Amino acid sequence: KMSTTKPVEVVNGISADALGSIAKRLIRRLGDSSFSRLLDEDEERQAINTLKINEADLNALVQFSAYVFEEAAYQTQEPDSFEAHLNESLGVLPKHASVMRNVWESEATAYIGRLREKHLLGSKILSDTTWTTHLCVATSDDDPASTKGPPRSKSDKKNTQATSVFNLHMNNDSEPPLAIEFSHQELYAFFQKLQDIQHGIDSLSS
Image (tube, rainbow, N blue to C red):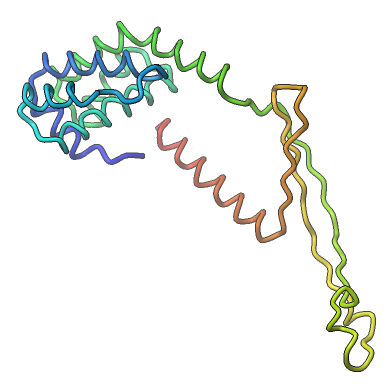
């Protein structure tokens, strides 16, 4: 989750009308793959001159606008809720939050539609998960070096390791499932990553 302290200072430092103009331009390009960047070089120079800010502040403004609009889209926030979040939770000035609300109210439907189309056409969707466990037994006989020296007992020659195989089934039935094998340590690390992702999702939803 991005830090919003510096970007909010930039947002509050420009006029509300200018904020509304650039926010509308940005949201109309979010989720549109025909744009390689939200603002081209000429637009960046124009914005810097018009808003009387430096390049770093402009980048902060663009990233903040994209962030709050993306967050609102994934939560399908109503305009009033969006405005309250900007003002009460993030510290955006009331007039500026109201302008952002108006942009969100007029552009949200089209923006969310682009995101849904992009998701359905460009991403694989997990439809099911199956898993199995295996017990792998490795013997020292597999190692040529183990033939040297005195004979060992059976207990010395065997090493067992439990593994799990996850099969990730995608929404496209014509594709075989993606199989991923984990050792105990790898599986533990993977679940730790999943917990980190869940915490990130929860923080966006709070």
